[in-house]
Length: 100
Image: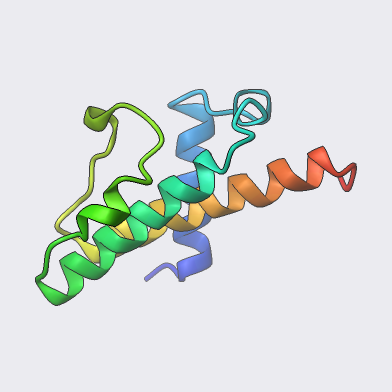
């Protein structure tokens, strides 16, 4: 079984190589879009794990088209997307601040 870090790393690689969400692509998101998307997937993970619904107030944070939000019924799938989005945001902020 893969660890959480390995799952997040795999998801981030998928985002880059299959979806084209490279550093250059991510650098255009300067208004917390990546972090907000991560919050939505984190909420989806909690909803999947505990059998609840995602708070509509949290869904208001979704930064892109509604049909781009594809939560899973599997909590881990949602968590790894959230983790990969946070990793992308950390990388983006570090590049912006000249740390990379």
